[in-house]
Amino acid sequence: MDGRARDEQLTGEGTVDGTVEPGIEPVAPYVVDPTAAAFFDVDNTMMIGASIYHFARGLAARDFFTWRDLARFTARQARLRVRGESHGDMHSSRESALAFVAGKRVEDVVALGAEIYDEEMSGKIWRGTESLARLHLDAGQRVWLVTATPVELAGIIADRLGLTGALGTVAEHEDGVYTGHLVGEVLHGEDKAAAVRLLAAAEGLDLSHCSAYSDSINDLPMLSLVGRPVAVNPDSALRAEAKRRGWEIRDFRTGRKAARIGIPAALGLGAAGGGVAAAVAVRRARRDTRSPLRRLGDDLARSVSTIVLRRA
Image (cartoon, rainbow, N blue to C red; front, side, top):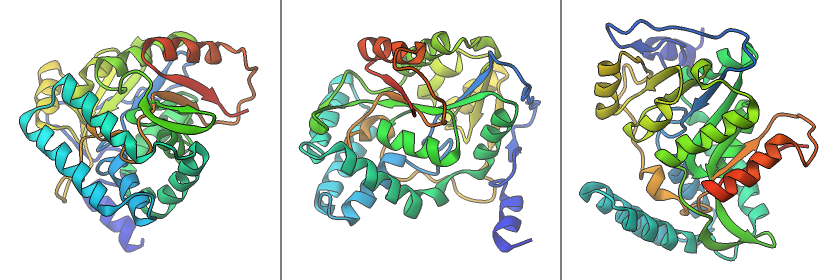
């Protein structure tokens, strides 16, 4: 056994169980069920820290924008987090952050995103959470990332992990160039839950058979939708709520300080490509452009500013 594998066994990072909260009996409904799926948050659930911040650091290192821009933006998000963000604060923050990508080509941002993930982000995946996702996939269930992070980045993460797809927040672009504005709202809180409902309807899923995983109390609407909500590396508020409701709690931070890197994803959209509210399917499923999933995309774009694409 190499050192990394041994360390992962000791910390729980590389195991399915990790630390299970006392008094909460873990269940594992990883059975073949065409109406079941799993929905995973990304930041601090699937990945250590904020994916958008890792992405922004990678872009700054490649002179996509300046380190001074990144520092100024991060400081602003920290101030908002300390005092509590209002809807107006979030809107203003997102719009100003999108100035970083205004005028940039989508294909260039996607290419950089893949490079940054492979070089700098892949090692930040919580292996215990990835193992949980793999159990669902091995049972033939679909697994979606559901995140406020940009769809281009969310899709790359889902692709690299071999997941079904990703729901994220949408940045407006025209003729393949970012305009610097969001399409609708960030995929966060109630909007996340709304997107999951629409996806479930299009995919023929029974939400009572589905699972959802998150670290944040902000995802309570999504967790409350499904038959099996799981708090993963939970913040204090979600831990308390999960205990109150008797939900399963998994913690893969055993033996190390919880990593809370950078800025809240719901505020940080745009620092590295704006937000995206999209479902990007990454499996090699051939579908007609007029498929139910494509029609779902139209519905999502109108309702919660999300789109759904599948690889042809």
